[in-house]
Length: 189
Image (cartoon, rainbow, N blue to C red):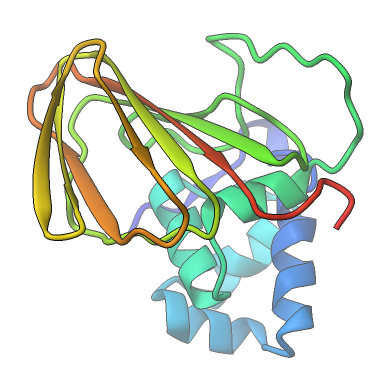
């Protein structure tokens, strides 16, 4: 697993704190999270102390170990209230690059959005409490949900209500997919 130190020594503001708060809320040690996630204790410590930033894949492994999602950890990382927030295309999202995953919304909000570019594998099944919309901006994707396979091309959308188990993958190298999800809680929860 790639473990990268943060550029300039700083990770996404608050991501380490979000990981630490979740770990402590579950009354887990770093060693327990390391065992659950398959990541090293020193790397997890660096993340919690804002001295390293995880790739999206590592963040998902951490989230799995903490029985949450990467989206929830990212949302908890920046709980500042914003009425308007611009996320620039080339802005550092605080994650190490690991295959084209970029948060499109920062902060603790009801809506979460991620952009996936390039190859994405259907190696993981997801179930979210809130609804989710997938939009294929370029290329093609294949989604397995509720026992059916849906093939999506450029401009297609797929809507999933909360609780639908699904997995997806890009089926062409030039694929760009936007995922937007809504949590079932208010931003102040």
